View 1 (cartoon, rainbow, N blue to C red):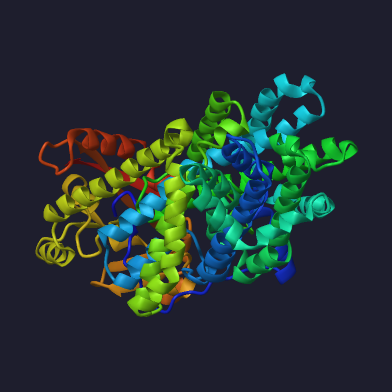
View 2: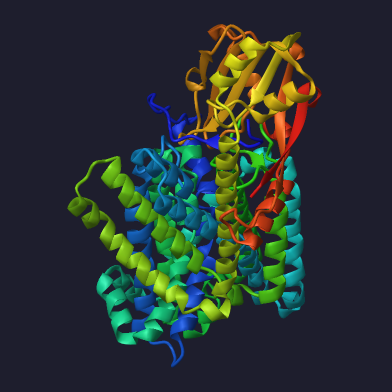
Length: 636
């Protein structure tokens, strides 16, 4: 095969269902820690930044109530209605997230479409661009509460944040299976605490409950015009973390995530924002840091410690999400192969991607040192999330039309209100472009360039290889007329095109002038399903007495293990013994060609990506002692 897996259009069999292990309440508790970590820490900075954006000429009571109303209704419309009620039902066999939706949309069309592919890589790139900001802003905002204890802590906040983040990224290689068991209880305590603080301060000024009326939110925007747009950009910080909620659906299931939101997370967040609003209505001097000023003085340090733990958990959720997204992108052929380590035998989602971990670490530390405070970082936060939301909504429309078979009018009636609100938020966040929002956009643009270049380069290589190759049946006919020397054992030739004779087979015949007694032409495809059960894993076809064609299908959330998959085919009649089998892989050397169809800089980028891609032997988990690599040169 090629030295990378190929993405298949889909299978004709019925889709495998997602399997969620654990009790309902255990999954619910787990989702509180993993799914809601990001959105759960937004009260640390969201209300404060929204007040700062609206306090140019001093804060009025109506403005404070208007900001609270905007936040509560953002949680209601964006998180509750769009994500929890609607989008969690738009899944790909139990899996959520931008790439899952892209795979489902492509499967629904039955062919690749450029628009769907571009939407998918745009959403994935924007999510990745935002992933480096969450750990930085979350940990900084938690530690900044120490300033209220004593100004002595001020010089140490930045170094402490760097140390905590350094430890967080350093422990990723060991996995988080043990530590994550505490995520749910700690975050449950966090939500109970912030909800309790909100209830404690509601009596400061009950007028804050007027914010339950959306007229205060709408009135605020109409009254403040462009200034209201600036506030809206800060208000959006309230709902950052929605995409993590959707992307992690496959780990916990829709019902546990929904239960956690309605029974704990949403009430706690709403009560806390109401409490912060009531506190500032009562004493406007608290607007500088209303969250921590809600705490009684003896409980301030414990609250800072709890907030720091909660932000570390939120950061962990984003890092895990970035690992999972990378795995999906690699399997879907959108990124080069890279090392993906499993850190848990029992949890499929527990993976570690060293290259991504290092890039995130460098990016996060650079942001912390460059911006220096959570308030400064808030200007960089939000624009990529809103872009991802618009992409998700657009893909959901495709699913509604093609998978659910809804009419255009009905689909638009459901999607259009969400799209209008998200485009409004996107416009508001664009106003922060020059003050920091360009950072995630530049990162997203870089990742999009890599994905497009890799995909296009792979297509050029595949097309050129196919033009220069021979049909497998034609080669077998030639070998019948002039049979080569046969040697004992089995040879597996990997190819990305089952109908074409692998280049490694030609080179073996040309240089060694022998063939093994048994030949397996093996193709490995990535399907549009998240995971494939064993009974749907393989297709076996006997081409001739000595040649067998095998197609292995893996889900885009699986790590392919070729020897194990072949060993399990013994019951289907495939004779396979790893000790008497040799795997022949083609190692391609790519050289630039001015007529490739890509600009020269893109040729060089593709060659660099190909050179640094993970070795196919390791990626497919083939024992190195059983591999023979034969080199070929291809121009692009």
